Length: 168
Length: 343
Image (cartoon, rainbow over all chains, first blue to last red; front, side, top):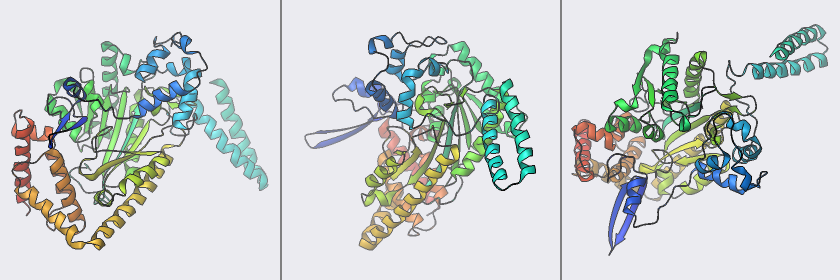
């Protein structure tokens, strides 16, 4: 819904005031709510707050005073700035901030290993790797059941794929 | 299948199923720091990836620059869940592609370069992913995504990294709210990595007993695993909701039906209705229709009514800007008008 004050931005603050037993309710956007200023802002708790919280809580491997120096060489974002806004500047920030970011990602996500969809273009290598893993499992089974012709065929297939990986 | 105009499986409790994925274009800065020129380039690239693709899907999309819409236009799309508040905040550089059935929307220059979503009526998360996955493949034919072999799809905020996927199911849970079981149910789902929000996203309160259940974690489990845990939770919650409704009927059938008929009375006779009151009365009527207590009204009509009576839709309906009090009068008029067609 729209803010009842400015009718422009979405209402994100629900303000209930009780004065002399008279209750008034207002739905405002954060900006109008702040302008009203006669109450303490309730800031909804979001996953981003959580993230920033974790960033502060995790024992920093880089001392805080040096975090400002931690900078993404591609986009110029520094780590302190990221901590403030909770948004990275570019894909390479993941690389340049890895030391600080990886433990936080592990905490928030519970994992640091993607097991989902792999894009056709950007993920060619990973696609092949996964295929090799699958074939190796099949090979193991073929050997166990003494299906040697099948095993030889799988072995050749794996070699071929591994060659492709090497060329990447 | 639009979630508003069409019926879907388990529509009585599950209003819609939505999948959203976040993608970025390799080598370009994320939207929050991108220059105007780069943002423009991103808009063009994504627009072409859909409109100029060979897929039959491509003919089905409309392209909209947000700065060409007025506020009412933008908020109407928001009320239909076809774009996000974040996209509106970046209206200067943002755009959206929406298909004609209003199932798929591809937001450009939101928090990530691309946020695409598919939304279906009722409980069909798998189907929504099936379609969105295909759209994702089409876009990828001409765009190289930011992707890391360990971290998956790279996103502007690390809370979306990995699959970049948010699956969310919108549920109508008046029984759990009335029996006060809702908080313990929400507490339980939070333990399995799911979270609940109100009708219009983060921070919004649960108007009309409507909750959106979605996954919190995007990295580690595959898309299918994320969907399967959401499905399990939603099925369980549906059972809980049905049990809560039965418990309410058993404790006092008269009270239960009285609340529902009174709500219908308010909707058919009130001269002013705030959004909050409208949503809570609508919730009771929806419950009554689903339980077979009120006849002659169908679920789809109620879904349409809900969207038609959100602020921006009402502004568009009367064609001029009105203040909040006038809006309540317009809302009451419109509700009476719509309901008089069926009752």
